[in-house]
Each structure stands twice: as C-alpha cells, then as structure tokens.
Image 1 (cartoon, helix red, strand yellow):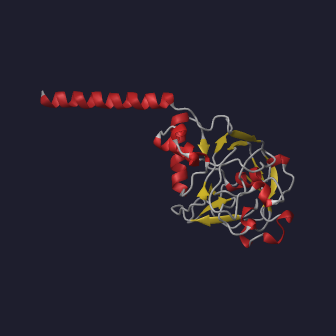
Image 2: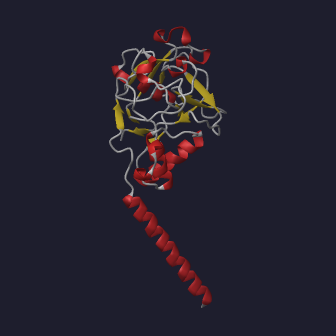
Length: 255
C-alpha cells in the first residue's frame, strides 16, 4: 500500500511537472519574431575577391563560386537579453543596460544549446548559419554592391572594432540586406567544421563531416586592425573555446 501511495505521488508530481512545462511552452514568446530577414538564394564568389585587396589571408583562398538556397537570418547578433530569456526565462525588461549588447563568451556548444532550446519552445528550425550563408548575407546577398566590409568600404560606418567593449546591436549602418554588425562587435560562430577552400563550384556547402576546429566570422570589438572585419575574413577555434569577443547569429530554414 505504501509503495502504491508513493507511486501515486510520483505520478502526480510528474504530471504537475509536465503541466508546468506545457504552460511555459504556451507562454513562450519567440524573441526573434520580426527580426528574421529573408535572404533570397543566389550565386556569388566566396573568399578573397578583388575588393579585399592585399588584406586577404591564405585561408581565404582560392576564391570560388558558391550557390546557396534561400534562408532567413537574424537582423542582429543574439543579445544578452535574448540569451537570458531563452536559457534562463528571465524577462528582458528586468535586465540592465547591457541587455541589448551581444551575448559573449559563447562556445560553439553554448550557441547550439541556445538554438536547441529555442527550437524546443518555438518548433521552428533555427540553426547556426553555414559559412557560405554567412558570407553571402554579409556581402549583401543578391543586392551586393561589392563592399570590403558588410555594407561599406569605410569600416567605421558599419563596424564596431578597435574599441574597449561591445556596443549595443544595431548602432552602425546596416548592409544591403538590412543586417547589422556583420562586421565587428563580436565574432560569430558558423556551423561548419574548418577546412581549406576548394576551387571548384559548390552548392550549399556545409564544410567537412568532421574536424577539430569550427569557423567563426565577422571580426570583434577588440580587434586591433579593421582587416579582421572584412566580409571574407575567416578564423577558427576548437568548439569549447570562448572569448569575450565571440558570439553568434541565428538563421531559420525556409519552409
């Protein structure tokens, strides 16, 4: 009888937990609603193109033709407020003035944990961008004007760099697609494992199946030279690495 009572209590507790979880799910408001920008698919030259000048590094070569499908990408880098709301269920209104700064100290795993949680609550197919999608969007997609940085040839018009700290998202000029901070503020993780470029044309490349290092893009607030903020600049690190100039941006599949 005691065992039956204990079992009944445990069942009721489990039911209460499920009801609470369901209530949380029903009350959840997607913090990216209205912030996702449609990027029409197209073909572009990825890597060290002419406008990048002498700033190109070896890992940006050879330039090669890439075709990507359509997708949505966030207008801004994921903010501290959005991170807190999704991962800790903290109301963004209660956060300090830092809430609209990009979330930093993000490992590749932290970024994906955030996305997994967001997918659970929203049922939407959010994910990290592939490196090709990131560069296509940074260049302005099919509206590209061939800028060196994301939206301008003048780095200080579009990028928060060589600074003392992060800046609130969206404080600089957007690029041709209306995306902010694709250059500067924080480096942004991509989904791809790192590898050297191949020169042959590719369609929706996703990088190698396995690897040791993951790619991140865009440059950060503390970089001592604007060349790190170029649209073709790429770097890599182990997935567990984090830094106070590293964050991420999300994309959404087109249904």
